[in-house]
Amino acid sequence: TVYRALNFLLDNGLIHKLNSINAYIGCSHPLRHSQCYFLICDECGEADECCNSHLSDAIKQTTEHHQFQTRQTTVEISGKCRQCAQNQTDE
Image: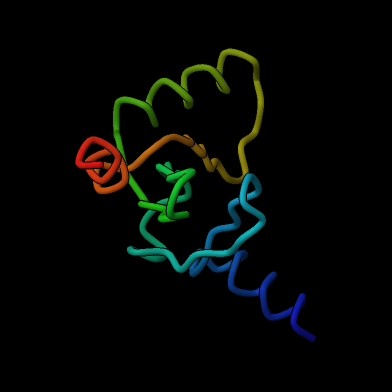
C-alpha cells in the first residue's frame, strides 16, 4: 500500500525520489515541470530543490540529439550547504 501511494505521488509530480540518499521529498512547485535539480548537503542532509532553464535546455538538447524520450529528470548534486560550510569555518 505504501509503495502504491508513493508511486501515485511520483507519477503525479507531487514528490521526488532522491536516489543518492534513498529518500522522498515533496515538490515545492508540483505539476509545473518534470525536471528538478537538488543540492544535497553531505553534512546535514538538507536537500534544496532548484530550477535552471539553461540546464533544462542543455539536457533537452542532449536527449533530443540521442533521440531519447525523457520521462523524468532528477539531477542530484552533493556537497556542503552554506550553513554547514560556515559552521566549519567558525570552529
